[in-house]
Image 1: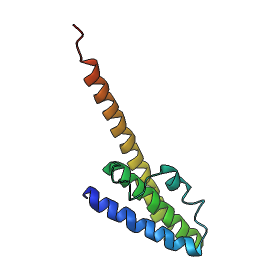
Image 2: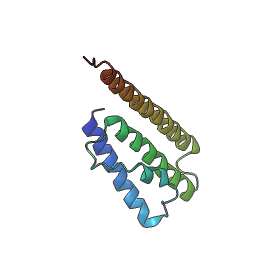
Image 3: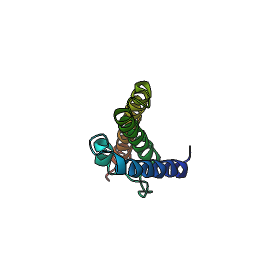
Image 4: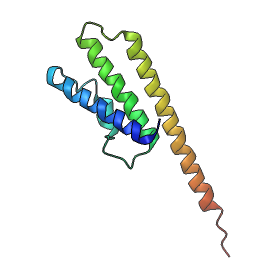
Length: 113
């Protein structure tokens, strides 16, 4: 998926969350998403960051629906989305570590004459 498509999906999920806020208390389930401080309007954020935010938000939304609607969606959907969020976080951390290592290697190759 392209970054602009991920941002559109991210925006859609935010609309779903806002809709759910009218009928349910979602603050507890969505705390992790709010702590990310990544919104669809943050176009400067990386594709991986938006992807992670989408997985966290979709997982939170599924938890809200699961707890408030007598188990719909099934718990395996909730667990699957949570697992995708964890994998995405590991990928994001690995990407940041690789970028930091690359920057360090570029800077350490400077010769002083």
